[in-house]
Image (cartoon, rainbow, N blue to C red; front, side, top):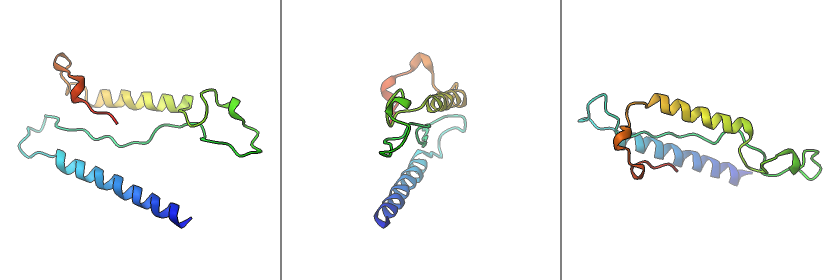
Length: 107
């Protein structure tokens, strides 16, 4: 419908605006080139089970062992691999001897 289409466009616009704003705010001309000031990672969840099924769908809830709307096994692997990639990509930037979990924000 037109309302859903407008909402999707609005959501995409807000997400892109946030992403660009984050990039601009995280840029510092005085930082040395090898210092990491901020990381913004924007991604969707991995593959997941459907949130509902059609009334006559032969695949009932029992087909999805974790229930509706949860990550599938493939989605869990995708998220694990994303975490491995991010750890490898930014390895060495976080000093683990001075790591403070209150400085890291994950939403």
